Image (cartoon, rainbow, N blue to C red; front, side, top):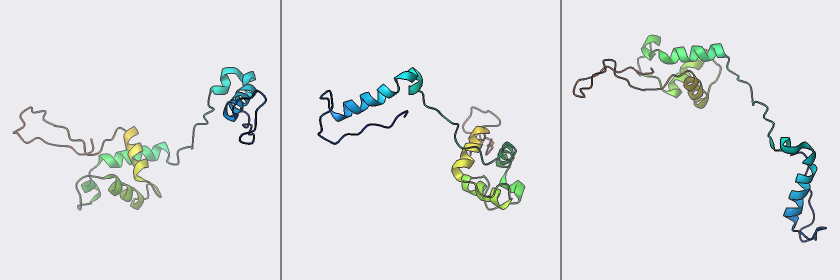
Length: 135
């Protein structure tokens, strides 16, 4: 907002006899008239910079594309966001990472969790098809 809103006591008459809300809005618009339509455009500053570098993001996507068995983890066969986040902290890839941040990193890296695609492309549903996790 380019100028602070003017406040008057509730119930007090305004110079033109208008309600307070209309008079306040007119005062706010009146002080911005010199800027024209530029007064309506928000000034975005871009937000907070990334705390995880692009190299680390690529490394996270690379780890997510591997199987937990490649890391000698036999307790589970596919990554979940929490398990992958815990693994990244244990491997000291990042000091901390939330599941939402991890989900966003994987989404921008086009790594989708547990999407199953047929490798053999067989239309026969009776035939067992091979499935690939994290591809």
